[in-house]
Length: 417
Ligand SMILES: Cc1cc2nc3c(=O)[nH]c(=O)nc-3n(C[C@H](O)[C@H](O)[C@H](O)COP(=O)(O)OP(=O)(O)OC[C@H]3O[C@@H](n4cnc5c(N)ncnc54)[C@H](O)[C@@H]3O)c2cc1C
Image (tube, rainbow, N blue to C red):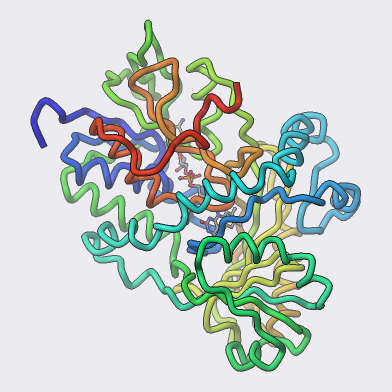
């Protein structure tokens, strides 16, 4: 790289998104500092289900969902629960979310998800190779199972959107399902199977491994809390941290759900809401799947991992500060045991994390109109592991002054203005 094009870049947040951005920026030859108040990969990126699903282009809000709202409000252990006391706070977001699920909008959202998610395996490959982490990725397919024909039919639009990407989607009957996953309960009558999908065997370990390689390769990994971003004219000037002040040449804001207060200091209002999710991990399950299995009507994902079997899911709208309700995690365990009878739970661990969600299921990426030296990379919602790799490439392209390799209009921060 020409020395004059080399930037001093500070990435805020060492989750999967910030760590991949920092890794790609370093590969481009920039001076990169990755700053986090904790060790890398300790928050949302620690406990996800590990799904890497290139054809996952289905928005979270879909047509017809509004009919389910009364049910959500009444079932404390259902797949989507809104805490009554939090409802007044999240209502404006919820309205925007349901509106984003209209028939007229989902096609465009789906195409934008495809641009980010389809290249995921290719975009991760150089980082995994350099860091010696290829063993963490398994492209062994994903199986989406249904308890009833009616449930399968209800999901038809999602399957159509996935097929529109050109990825092969096979429809399976009960016998095919059992051949693929012999330990599954006999209750499942239909499935769709995507061979091109896969999973990560240790999402938290992936972030730590990438961050370790980043530090060994000349990146600067700093443990500090960013308290504020000072601005002047059309630029950010200073990062105020718990331990002092830092000059801001170029900033990448990738702090997941915690990006919201920082972005507000920059003069933007972004509807970012935490969709809290839970997992249980069973260290010695005795039985289980060969690949990642998603029970669509239960809204539960089950993934074989290095540290055992992970069962994850649920969406809880209860805000960032409310304590976890681990009864929800134990409900996931209960459901998992109906999907794979005989699952042993001895020594299981439970966890809650904050999916950083915009109403339209798309992250915020790229420069905004207010500061010429702040790049946004947050709001990846349910798909941050999946979308991080292409996000990192795009952020590095923009930092280096090159045109981005995908159209960034759908991810613009100005869409919320
Ligand atoms: C139950 C569950 C299952 C999921 N399953 C999948 C899946 O299968 N596939 C998939 O692709 N995605 C999945 N996700 C979503 C995925 O985990 C998230 O989208 C992703 O982890 C978000 O990454 P991030 O780097 O943006 O945020 P985070 O991982 O939360 O990282 C943000 C970082 O910023 C740091 N930070 C915050 N504020 C500051 C500050 N002021 N100063 C310094 N540092 C700060 C935090 O300490 C943290 O390390 C799942 C999520 C959940 C909850």
